[in-house]
Image (cartoon, rainbow, N blue to C red; front, side, top):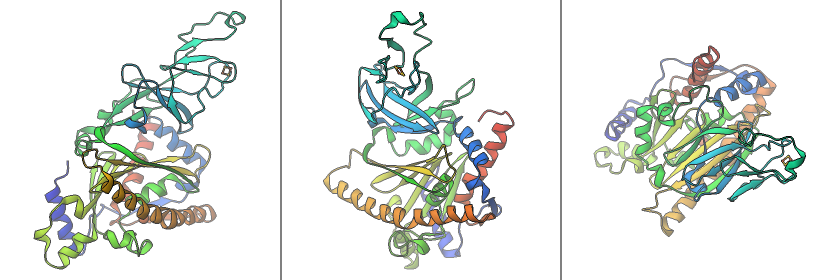
Length: 388
Ligand code: FES
Ligand SMILES: [Fe+2]
């Protein structure tokens, strides 16, 4: 668990010494990791063995509330149950494979496949077969929709598609340190105030890299984000597979320049933080909201991903004024992401497809290094047969 005073002290020291958090060594990643079909398939297989975030609690407010989502190549029907828990079924009809629920979201007592009317309960069990007398008797228990390991924790719905024999709980997966980091932000109470999705012709890892890259703001975003956050100054705290990083806002840099660092008040007003949950969550912490990103590799091409961005707000401080501030934050983020970050990442993807080579992650790029190091470690481990 991070200590705000300590992080602040370290960032101030980095400014004074003109340095930043340093990884033990430089890292080189072959461009094939961003373009190769076989490598992408290995990553997808690995991602299916760990809990991934598929929904915010408020997307499923009541029993029967549901969302449908394609998660790592598998269509899911995610439903709030009568007892308040959340269940996820594979959204494929047991009759002849139709997509059972086609709406993106809604609320239903039961789910009827529109092809021949087979009907399933909220928990996926098979309830009704029209013209059942013409089928051989079948075990309804065995012909319910296949279930996927699901857990709601920290106000988020997590699924593990291929959990193996003994599914890990989310708490086990996050570990005690990351659990505590989550608790600081009260995700359970959070309101979902913005929900956007973008599909871009970029490998998913370039987007995840970009979200924790503290080396680019003043170069790629000279007029927007680069004026708000410092460049090449960052504290990186690894937490096993996961990580939290801290980047100063320009306000802190200016205070240090003016020799007024002792007067700094309000941690998140001066420091931006990003929580990374392996493999694809980046949650940027701001003083008024959380910008919660999940980046999904496409299941058919290494050169495509879908970025799901949710803004989460604190209900205790959310009012009209806050809504305006958050809308302004979205304007800044949208401008940076859609006009600067993703277009740059698109050129990198196109270049990686055109000419193979390696990408270099300097010692000062410990944040972006983290994903690649952990991914390489987990791929090696899971392929050697150890649990993810
Ligand atoms: S495929 Fe669903 S009812 Fe026939
Ligand atoms: Fe950026």
